[in-house]
Length: 323
Image (cartoon, rainbow, N blue to C red):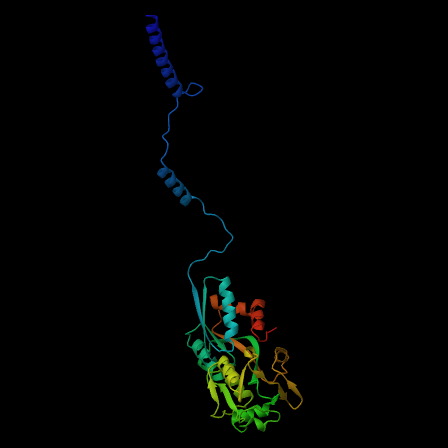
């Protein structure tokens, strides 16, 4: 009987203990009852975090913010000016991600006509705009961006060491047809026939050469016309008996650039220094042209070409800076 009483006592004590624990769980340490907050599911937590991130204040940054809209300008014209403008455009677009500068050649005449007709935003020319062109397109604004010399080049196998302006004129007018007619000139293993390479009628380099060297006379019909400095250079490099003329910015080891015996006084080589000092006789300015005062992206890009950074590109490309 005593054992049964002991068992009942244990059961009662256990029930009391359970009630005391339940009461304690429902109260705070100071006796205040608390309300249990249900734990949020992982999905609810994730949704809350996304909403918080989209409504938070934007992070301040010093980096330029792109509008995502490209600003495009088109440029065409002289293949002599093109290397300067193309390199400047590449550098400019690297720093201005919204700028899209599209450049094509075609020659100075093409560039002047295109900017006059407003089919491009900028024209390139290696010659001055004529009076007739200015009369036709009175809004043209011409800006000099560099200086240049025109080098007379021959194939490296030619033994000639220098040439006079009169000899160059005679070759291009067709009165000198053999290299043996020029003292010191000889092309081994050939008949010494002169192969004359020039530019097409749209070329500003052709116009300047014809006016300055040929004194506005018409070149011989045997002259092979090429549409770029690069094409002239390549043809002369591949043709032993040839002669051509290119911008000094295009001269390479593949051809021989001839010093000119000038005014029966001295040899003058087609170098940057001689162009800068104006001692080289076939020198000229290089231009970009706008229709009206340049503004917007066109104006900013032109200012970049004229800046110290842009003029460094002029020098790096083998031309003569304005300063």
